[in-house]
Length: 247
Length: 368
Image (cartoon, rainbow over all chains, first blue to last red; front, top):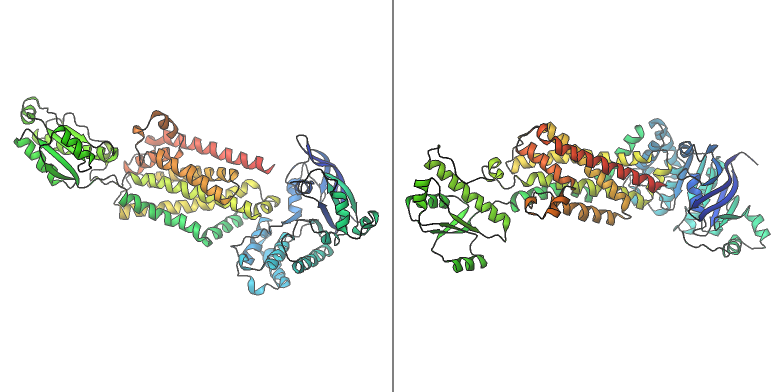
């Protein structure tokens, strides 16, 4: 076990009588790809918002990158990256302008931005597209660019909120290659997904049901424990006991 | 600070690359100025007037010839009885009737005072009011001639409008109103739409997760529109001076300062709307209907507030544009200084403070 970058202890978020997140505890190690699964309404998003420094828990404790979610939200924000299903790039800004903007928002110096974006554009093979508006790029490129932008400021952890929604299988596979690369480079990846084949790519996954963590282990171990052939069956066995259904 | 600049630059890219935004920003003022300046003036020309001259003396003859020589009226000299007048009005053939009673001339000579009857078509109150003003002004002028300058113009009180607008330039009054309207549309609509757009795109989420402070997001959104609105204001002033022959009589500095205040008011309204609206369309609709109509109707530049029921007059006090309109009229058209408009400025500043705090407060609670 390496160093732990996310530590949650008995984390709870309550809205009135409703326990969106109910007493969850887990740790994520540095460089790990950590899958966060659950049906809609299971409490994934709420938990993720707390870990991203967007909302406060009702009780319990958690640290992200060593910073406390109650008192050090600003520090947390500096040390994480975030990408959602919506790709989060500005369509009427060019590729370079998007990179410069996000780099600037994270307070990187102009020189650092120039240096890293040159490297990034070369890696992505986007040399000819730098002056193109992002809106004109194909979906796969946008997604790769969005991910690269999310880790442009070299965060310790990147949160991916259903990053592959609405993307074709080939592009998804390529996207996961990028995730592996990032993890190999020491970035911890915290990913939510609805695709169970993607769950197989994670080092460990948790499955949330009705605000609680019902299972947490490596995909292989989970399949063995539930006597299932694939993650889909594991998920189904756990999720069908759920009483909540919507977000 | 550097982050803020990066953000502001991005907002400018958005504005300059979006043709719709540019069109609203700069096309709208031109259209409005032309529309209000040329087409929708309260100036009335060639109105049909029936003059019933029962006195038939030198006085009435001279007044009539004065009326004829003005470009406002087409004079029909006829003897019409009550029912005929009524019929003519109903058919819309005439706008106004002027009736000199039989002893007009002698009354004027002996008592220095004579009455005339003016009947106007009240179904069109603005035109009627204007025509009555023209007629009283013409008669006041004649009386002054008679008295050799010494005689007091009895019983005739020219409207303020005449006082500050001797040539009867109808677009004069509209300009301050149009400026207020444009600021409302441009600032409130464009700001609310641009904030809501980020929400729709999902980029707002990214910004909130970034170390960039949420309040700074709003400031960064507002600043480009503040700058562009000031540019726009200059543009409108140039148009007004150049095409509509309107002179800016007061201090330009004061005018810009007051306008900056009002732009901030409008931006706050826009930010507030962006908190309520879930989609760009909703934001657009709320700003257009919710802001444009009150500005148009309850500011006093199109429909005089004094003519409205008390209820609406009270409501009009809540419309920020109403106060800005008064300020611009005072400073731009009458050439008054800050001393004359400090009360209005205070009201406007209070409203801005309240709106802005409300917008920021709502934004914060939404984040939780």
